[in-house]
Amino acid sequence: MTQKVALVTGAAAGIGAACAKRLARDGAAVGVLDLDADRCAETVASIIKDGGQAIALGCDISNRDQVQAAVGKLTTLFGAINILVNNAAITGYWPFLEMTDEQWDMIHKVNLTGTFIVTQEILPGMIEANWGRIINIASSAAQTGAPRMAAYASSKGGMIALTRSLAVEFGPAGVTVNVIPPRFITGTIMSEDSFARSKQPMSREQLAMAGPVCREGRPEDIAGAVSWLASDDAAFVTGQVIGVNGGRIIA
Ligand SMILES: NC(=O)c1ccc[n+]([C@@H]2O[C@H](COP(=O)([O-])OP(=O)(O)OC[C@H]3O[C@@H](n4cnc5c(N)ncnc54)[C@H](O)[C@@H]3O)[C@@H](O)[C@H]2O)c1
Image (cartoon, rainbow, N blue to C red; front, side):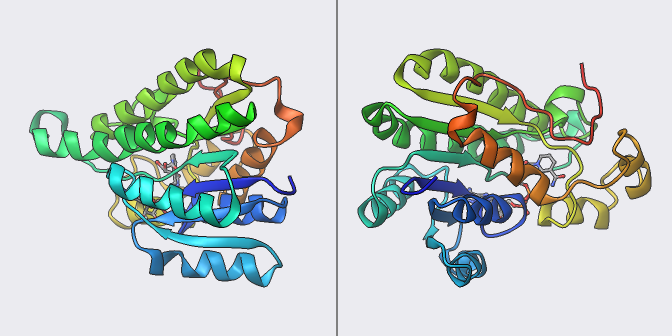
């Protein structure tokens, strides 16, 4: 992956940080994007300590001006972006009948509109290079549904549909687009918060044992799949929903 440039959103922590570190280890120069540049410092320091290249990009993915500035900064420093991991997201838990317009809009604005904005700003460079990899991080909640998470689950379902549409539209331009819907990845802010506030309908142990691999998922499990999807080896894979979920069968 030498000389490739990757942008990972939501990379200050959790799954995004693991993806950024993994792509850097694979040889890419990485834009570590998150809401606050200072929060990206740990991920960037770890990449540089291991001999990689990275820059912190403070940016709200739902703000087009900020996205344009971040993409400009990364491109000026390392060159055109070849790999995009749309990972940043927020969640919220509300009984459907009590959810307000503002809560619904807030979730969709970040998870779906933010993905749309970042992707639209980066795709032209990939098309020009006739090579690009877009990996979207959705959620198994989009496949199974989740109580009190209708806004989050539908925003992630939108990411799956967006993935398939972009794969069809930009396959001829050398750009592959795939989506990973994780399930139960521990050690991240989002998953630990949901356990701390008892938002999960199942216990940790029940969740771990619900798939044949019988353990909790780790951010590195997702990063490994992202690394492969970003590689030349995955050139013939596009528009796919790649389940990295311990083997739990989801129809
Ligand atoms: N952890 C899980 O079990 C799990 C399960 C299913 C899906 N996912 C998905 O995986 C991805 C990563 O989740 P995680 O568990 O690592 O969560 P996390 O909360 O630890 O990380 C998400 C990161 O996104 C950043 N972010 C939020 N809004 C942003 C915005 N507007 N602009 C820029 N950055 C923003 C946050 O600051 C945070 O650093 C998310 O898309 C999430 O929906 C996670």
